[in-house]
Image (cartoon, rainbow, N blue to C red; front, side):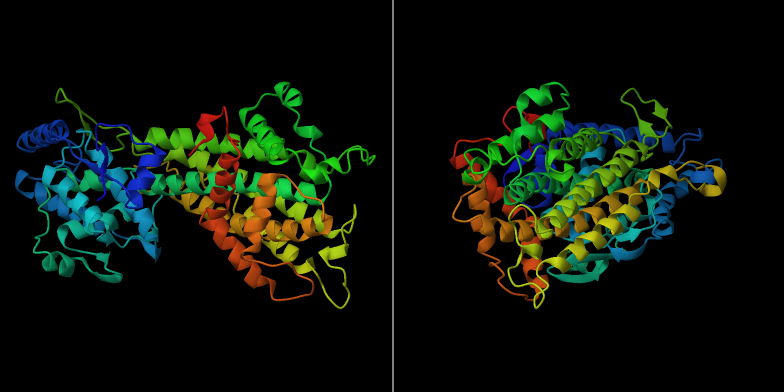
Length: 521
């Protein structure tokens, strides 16, 4: 049985908790105290709706129509219509996990009691999560301010019996699924439609996904980079702790420490201590600085994402004392900027990985040209590096910051928007490519290490090599390498490669992230 893990609207939601709920291994609940706050906020909105005073979104139109008064009799119709009129998303549906994250984060924001929603509405959203009846949400259409209006509108159409949902492996009309369960559509109260669609939950869901994926890519990059360094008989001297105390960026220090642990007691490393090479190329020597800089960007994104996870991004907000404040908490800029920064950080991990792939092919330092003994008849590992080069360039074209642009909407009332929804989708496209780049470097590094036999690498890297060989064998001649890439991409993408290496490290009583708890996911 899935156990409660936190109280919506009351406990602090962090990365571990939100991912656990999204994956179905845990759930959140509404406590009696939270329910009382939600009911109190709802009563305040009902009181406002019955007064002659104009309050945005309760008895007025939206956006440029904020000065258009709506009669008390029409306040509920208004909320129904806003979900319909704002459901203008286009493109492919977002992954179901993204839609689940949107539902989870929206419940947590609304349950804090500043939005005036009905308790029954929150309970219906929790029903969607519990029964895995997940709305179909198009991926494009949000400008990332005034909330993620279009995707959130599609997310909540099923509440009123409209739109589509995924149910038991099929895409179905929401109304049909509600009828199957004997449920009626929710009758939205004043302000509820606006509260549901005002917010950054689309951007936030993609940020959560990016934080998780980039974490595992960074972990993999250190391990794979260490394997490439071993194959190229590089030195571990640039990872000396004394050097990194002199430039103590936390990411740099962490990567240097991880590389020291990963290379500890390596026979390969000991075999060339007096080789006479003074310095390695930057893609080997500067891993702490490059991987570390990307880790610093990751840490910043994680910190801001966890702030947003626990924020109220509605407008207007209903304060406990009854005041109603119209503001801009829905604006996506606080996440748009770090998402664009993380996009560059992820692309750079791929960039330096491609450079190591290239080094492995040059036929230097005792390795055969193109990592195969009989080249000419065979092309060896030449062409997989073409793929990394293509993916690296594609990532560069995706690095233009979406947040650097703004197009006025709502006839100029909403004259600066964040485009953070594009930032969130874009960083995950870069991560898609990065996972393939790392898979190709892993394939190449494992091939190269075989030419160092009978010498062994460290215990952790030997275990990593053995794990890879469960999926992909040594290539003595050309074959369809796309199959190998696909298999290794799978263990990068599902995080099993990193988890296996971490388990081995734990068995050796080595914590690769010791002393740096803020980097642990």
